[in-house]
Image (tube, rainbow, N blue to C red; front, top):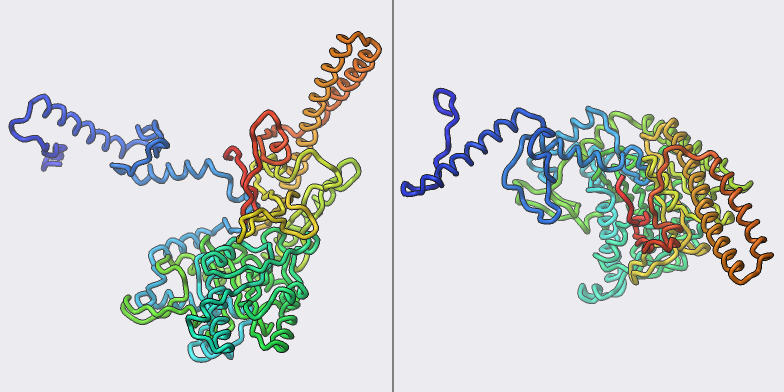
Length: 603
């Protein structure tokens, strides 16, 4: 702008000998650009030229040349978000999705802080240590460890989710075992590195552990439970361990059904075997989900550092810890011969500090929000929340139990029940009913009412062979099941709504598939009657005609039966998708996440 407020045209790149027409064209272009920018600053996004075309070209994505007003950018992102599923109706995930305004402000504050820079932000890192100590206290960590006596802080770390926490715990076990094995057999460092260690874990492990097997060169010794127990046992552990075992992983709340592995039982077995054989095998408790549920369940047997052989515990702060996504925690019994194996000294940020994490630069948001949540809720608040979730899960479980089909239970419940487990409802359609659809068909029919549950096969990909293997010893891997995670935001009213949606979805599938089968039956009867008439067999043709009449009457009765209003069925890759001859649908790829990977329309 000049001194009189008039828009100034930037100088052109043309020299004095340039063609006048070219100069005019360039000036007009510059004027248009200026006018567009002024107009863009005054109007809404939906009235701008930007709303006329895709934000990013699908055919040729490029880095944009020009920017846009901040509110336009925000509106575009909000529009993308609107096309996703409603995160509050996503019962497939364990991750917390609800936050108070004050909590969001704390998260935004943490975005400005690089928690790795301990020397510049010592007070923020003190908050980190406060949270480590609070969680260690929750898990009954011993206060007589050398590191706690000397520093007042337990051996532990905030991580980016429980995946990093599991990897850190696994690495500490590996290096601890390597030091022990080298000393026991008098090996050099090079010689001990040739030994192939193993770790014992349930086949129901989360994806984090497959990364440990692959990245850290550790043999997984997988225990396959039964679908009725869904947990490992002490006897199974005893048959798996040897002098190359770095540790046993016990899962406090597997993500399929919410069962707790009997850590207390495994502890007793390892205590005896370590004494008999001179081993030093310990336990890592993967409490990704149970770490913020189990401590608040009165009467549960000891599962944490009260057990001698529990060496480390990890948890996701962003699950039932109620923090923001990307928050995890790991606590060790002691620093000596455990976390010291993975500590890295960092001195180039203006001081000396130990780093226990695989990630380095990261925001302090998760740590700050976890601190906020612990201060906000306290022990009583977490206990009340867990009790609410368990009661809501119980009501939904009873709702499923009450549903029948032709006088038989429609569902077989697979979770542990109402106590001493995660607030999870796991079930499968009753195999005795021989229904023409499965739990994955049910999952996608439910999603038409905007709810999302996890439907999947009882199988996983063996991390060593990449072959699909049954999860359990007593049921085929092709059997399907589904799971509902009752997070803190699922109120009783929402659970009752979901129960109704599940019942309507089953009724829709029953009616739709019966109609489909009757139509096919009527078509076959008609073709058979034509053939009999052509072969001059009128009596046989008349018998078939009577069957056609009965089939038509049955179809009429079905058409007047009560159906769920407004439900749309989308194609699935469940039983119907696999059997449908009119399409080329193929079975989905079922990965370690536990959810069937299927192709379906976005919500």
